[in-house]
Length: 165
Ligand code: RP5
Image (cartoon, rainbow, N blue to C red):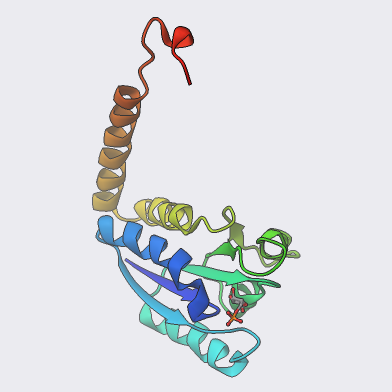
């Protein structure tokens, strides 16, 4: 199983490293590369072909501003692409969100929330768990632990409405 993480600039790294952390916690192999649709278009084309040759199964692509990287790589391969809108620039990521979520048919890009590279990785894990039973088990164990932790940490005392603050 393999995920390729790409992002448009080194300035996206603080957001995109969250995807790497989640994939690593699930033991999913991944590669990471800075590549730009408008600054390195030829390299992007070659990279899409290489991903297919290497057996990459899901691509996570982060970009800010006009954010065409996820859509362009989606046009160059039939591998599923999860786009992460990055909140760089004056519009706080709304520009990137719209670019990614409004992909014209028939080239879809799955979109997560602005800067939510964490969810992009969880979605990639869910996709891969359809094929890899051991990953499905890890995901199920993670969900059970998360749920139990949530219940434990979110108990309301009887007099919760009398507390100050
Ligand atoms: C996009 O433009 C990148 O994904 C980044 O979010 C944004 C700004 O890039 P830099 O000018 O910081 O390289 O291509």
